[in-house]
Length: 335
View 1 (cartoon, rainbow, N blue to C red):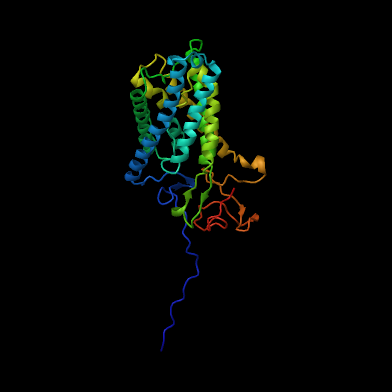
View 2 (view 1 turned 90 degrees about the vertical axis):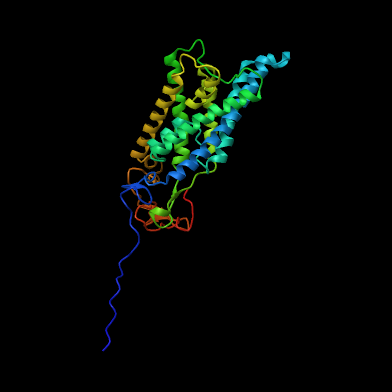
């Protein structure tokens, strides 16, 4: 007498989302850095961020050293007589293009931040861990110091890339100029890099953040515009490392704290506004539907695009269920 094999269950065994920091690093749908991230990965990323910071600050400081050398120490009347507006444009372009070029190289390597307050904002929005924020900040400041020392050694004395407040700008004015300009820069970074789709690979473990390769262009333009505004008044730091690096080679002005407090407040302001945008599901008033599917507040979406580009129901954009999403499992990008 044969015994019938046990009936197999037809229950869907698709993986389910976790509510802790394992695998995808999500807490109640919040996509954040995993707490169990290997320390070795942080060290590798920190080393890459240090190299990127050295390159960025070398390009920025080198360009600024060149234009100040021409306008102040040059040996010809024509170059010495350059109007201030040309100096302003050269200065702003140097930093904007240096950031654009360097971040374009390093955005896949370490994120290409080169700024402690940008790292702070990404930590506050759960894009990097607190540990990585601290390690990156040290690397960025060390990179600025190393770059200033290299430019000092490679170009004639003195080092001309330090900044200070304009004589007619008081400390509160300088503080708030740095705060608002940094807030604009950080907000552009959050909206152009943090607000990118997570491509689902079938479960939370395989969800990865795909950066937009065109983001450095927009961020570089914002950096350029912010420099146009701030350079005549504060020197346009927008970055504590940018002010601290040259100051270690030359001297610290009495108002050096402005270049720390202002950018930190700017990062806090931008992060708070970013959280408000996410809390308010910012895309609904504009499009009439929820396209902010990467919400850190655990709100899913009811609609999405299928592989044929058709928008409709039953195409969830979120990957928190662990079920492959139509249009994404095959690598299709939602725009």
